Image 1 (cartoon, rainbow, N blue to C red):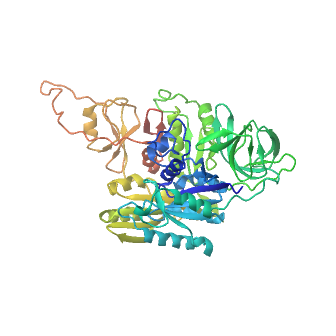
Image 2 (tube, helix red, strand yellow):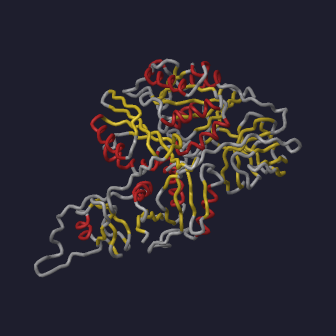
Image 3 (cartoon, rainbow, N blue to C red):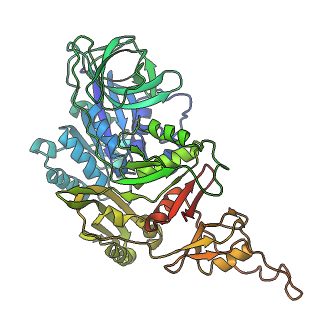
Length: 591
């Protein structure tokens, strides 16, 4: 077991976790597999959505051999909505590399992941990343990190954390913040071997393995990944499977795999302390235990944080229903939603008879699921997101978020005004080098729909991050949309003539030559009420007016609706729904 180290890489979104893993894999000469070349980057982000958005959504394992020691590295998501993944991953690790951006410093998700790591008594190595940035403020960021450790109740030994300075992009690291003295990424490997303890447990004790993630395989069935805490695991072994209800069942393993680089390789035996994957138990799920046949003992179940947001998914009932999807029946949609529960412990699905209420950790969490289903060929409709409120001692409590914002000084007034309208409470405000940093506490239901407004107000130069804070007594505040919708009056194909008339009323979501139906929302009105509008109207020719007359009028580029933008848009309206198909995302009125 002294030859194994299990380390999780944790950080706020976009602080460079996946880029650092790239550097570690390359400099350890790890075999990457046929699909990767010398120029491949963000190797661990292999999902299409992860590549497009530049964020890690699913945690992944890689194994590196360094100085004859096997280092199991686990890359974790950085977005707060995927906190469930982070918590599970920390169960597999004995220590963490906490990455912090040398310019941004500790952010809301940094606080969340560090709090979890400290609760589990993990050894934390702080890596100050992106020191090659022109505006890096290394010493200040280090001081803020130390303050955060103390704030989260770290003891003296933990608070004096080992520090490594790094530029994961340049694949260099060192114990001093001087790029010229750095040669390669070796100091990070040395810090892992020096500070991260070897796994505890014993190979002589009865078998205990905790399942932390599951994945489907076309040949081997469901594969469960986890860590062997005690005992040994052999291929084709009979084991006891203890489920979440505590029921025990004898099972036979059909495959035992260990990690080498990015690949899962079949092996004959896995020792205590190592991370491995097993197949042969079709119904196994996250948080369950694989135990010894003669002396089965369950490990503590993994706690799963409760969801804060829900929305209803149902069969598409629009006039265009069934035209664009491959899977569109209620049976197919239900099967897909329940299949997701096998791998996503933070998700909840409830059958209502006429649809399914899906509950998750945040807007992004649910939007990613819906986007994945859309790309797989599913067609359905989704109601507006709503917060999940709790009744405690007869009083309604609502989820509250901590929001951190960084904007250029000239836009700070607009942000303050908008957050004030949404009853956001300013906790902290600093200004440095023309950049204003603000921290707000705001009800989740009032933050809905603000991100797109924020991007527009700051001309794309602002940074906004939020994380669930706690449940608080509901003060009754509610934010409703300030603008109504432009609704299609009759079905048909949109014409430029009709759209030119419509754009004088507000902002359009569609362009010419688009099939629309009566009741479809094709834009937002400049005023509060909805307007029915005919966008399929053609220009009539007369003796005095030719078809080409008036075409020099300018048509504004429409704002094409992404899934997340559409979900944000319908938040303020009870009578609107999002129609999701593999080819289109449409908004329509329900009546």
